[in-house]
Image (tube, rainbow, N blue to C red; front, side):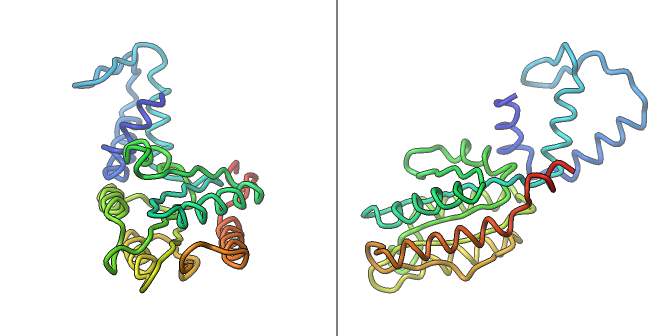
Amino acid sequence: MPHAKKYFANILLLYAPLILKLVDKVTEMGLAIDMICPDHGIIWRTDPSKIINAYVEWSRQKPKRKAVVIYDTMWHSTETMAETLVEALGEAGVEAKPFHLRGNHRSDIMTEVLDAGAIIVGSPTLNNGLYPTISDFLTYMKGLKPKNKVGAAFGSYGWSGEAVKRINKELELMKFDIIDPGLRIQYLPDEKGLAACRELAGKIAGALPLEKEIQK
């Protein structure tokens, strides 16, 4: 099932609305399905309803109380912000998963994005723009059209600090709910900066559904 989820998140997510329609169509036919034999991939010989139900759940993209913090860093300042956000989100009862883009493959990150309620992206500013790995991932994620997400941006900078604004623009194009203008901190975050990270985490936690709401 983990491999099936990864395949769905990176290949089929774009077609989620069509999948729901097709499942409804097959259900209306009243077929007794004993086995599912795809053109490629594993054959579902026992309990094929397991993968059908999973496809329906993934296609609906119902968000969990979960945040994915995706970032890259030049001199560890943005990384420090990311670590503080993850810690504060955890304290607020949010399942928070950090992903350094140079240490994690984008397909693995997208697998976690699939059911996350919040996508938080952090980047330093390089040449008045985004760090290349961040730009790459945002382009990849945008093409898969994830839905029902809260979005937020953060980053450290030295001179101008445009990265946060550019991240927000990309998240807006994906129709994420941007709950904050974004957190920009010049150089290494001090105590005031870390407190701002915790405040942002509180906003994100407040925008996510509670566990009792998810289970309804």
